[in-house]
Length: 115
Image 1 (cartoon, helix red, strand yellow):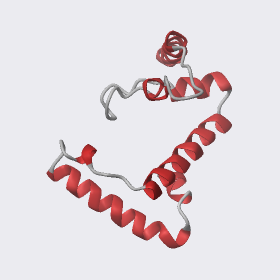
Image 2 (spheres, rainbow, N blue to C red):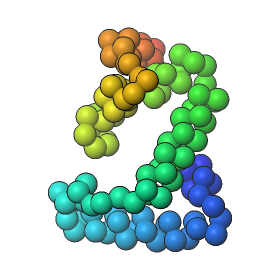
Image 3 (tube, rainbow, N blue to C red):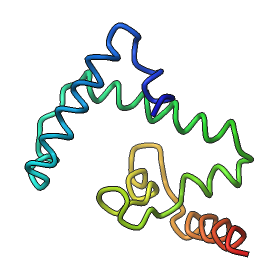
């Protein structure tokens, strides 16, 4: 969370935390309506920077194979939607995901950890 927050300009961090707290409070009140809120361009841009920084951090701190295994892990209900990053990347302009390979990478890392 600190890495993500570091992406936000210092003078906006408190406002961002307040907004996140307000959104979480609202989500808990109306969990099925939260996803339908209209997002501003600024929120999308900030979210994009946060995702980029977090992915860069994972890629810089691990081998390519280990970074892929971390990023392609299926979170089995701990997120929203399918909980699997390749599902959200596949089909975006310029990106073609080899879903079978992503599964192999993720499962191989998971099997090594279990041994």
